Image (cartoon, rainbow over all chains, first blue to last red; front, top):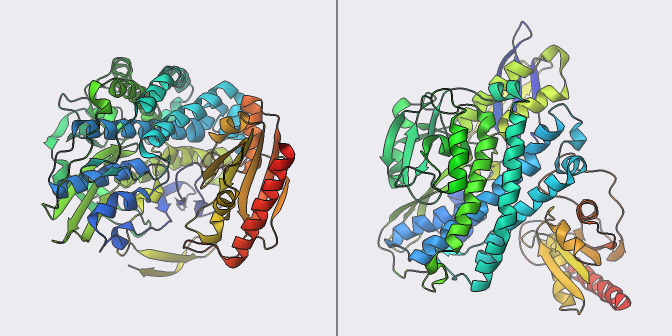
Length: 475
Length: 142
């Protein structure tokens, strides 16, 4: 019987990772760890660059959610200028963010996670993907592909390209929206709404088929953190930070994203390149919190759009008296958000000022420190820049959504391993459920391992029984 | 209409050879050109809207440029989801949208796939050959 079971690579996530499952003397799962094994370096190599370059540089962190980084970066640059951007620019930034969240959530749900739900966690691994899905239900697969394309098209229409658009800049955006772009987006809304509705209904009908997974792929109490609107509703671009607990109590309200460092700390562990942010008042690891769709749906009192309002109310009924604590319900929360995104896309495109040509405030540098925050598909994203008097970057600190879920993902992996893995009789379906615990969070590991310099690089040498023979570490 | 899809990363030197191929090709009546870092399932719809598709890609195997019919996929990617190969995206176009046209693959071998921009001399020569092969093919189809 193995003492250490390794799942490497973890599949159907954004990036590269592995999971170690440790077995005790009685042959039972003792613990598990989620290792992020890729390595970036964005915080370091942007030092010395003019801050105006940052949005374009930061877009390169990720090919899935570049818009999130562009927006947080542009907002940090707005803060360095000390300007309020024109109303049309804010609308356009919001519109692109909704397009981004929609396409990213569609990728997560249709391409990566729905094969488990529609084909089964124990189905043949070679078929458990988008292509297996299209054999099983071509219309559903087609809708998923087209929904993602719709979100990407919004990004392309505004930013000129689907990936790495460097269109949001310090003080606003580079170009106003054309009437043709607005018309094209509005034309796509009805089909997008129909597709999300179909996916939502399908998901709700499937939930009862997976009671074990729903309860054991990461069900535990934690804090939930995210932005809320002025009225306490769903917010994805600019709002105060709210933190609530597993009972649904608001722990902190009205927090300023610019001062994130007063309530968020960052720890590191030897087994992963990804940092472990925590809520400072409760310390590490007691200050475990979750971000992203599940957190946003838990902390918001309402969605702010008619269809999503109804779905959010229904979602909240799944909570046993407080917050929805099952990580499995990230999938459902993601669909509620997709519905909200499509409604907001239509709403923003119908705003009278959306085609206004004044989309950029002009100013010189007025500050040496700027923090920008927005809600990325996977959760709250912070960019913190410090520049010298000439505008050259002295320091950057990025707090990434996936990193903020790191403590929770490790907890989820361990819970799933303990529930589903029988080390004496391993099956692929058991290990897939452990991976599925991670997929609930839709982690983006390219984003989350942006740091360079302080992360330990570790090589472990173990014998066949899993005993550690040697270890070399740096950092 | 022929859809030409140039695949590759121009920041990885010769991996961007396909972008150079379509630059050399210029605008061709009856052809639409798409450029991308990598293929995505969403492109199946674009392929289905065309009568035929030609993928242009760099090749890590040394040699000369060549244009050949695309072999059918032996099976779907086990990892599935993020990126697909030419045969897979054609199969998607066929399965989801009824595409039945020709599919070709044009390869431009390179030798330097490190970080940086610009092609090696060998890749530049192969890109020129590939553009010539493509032009000849498009003339035949016209």
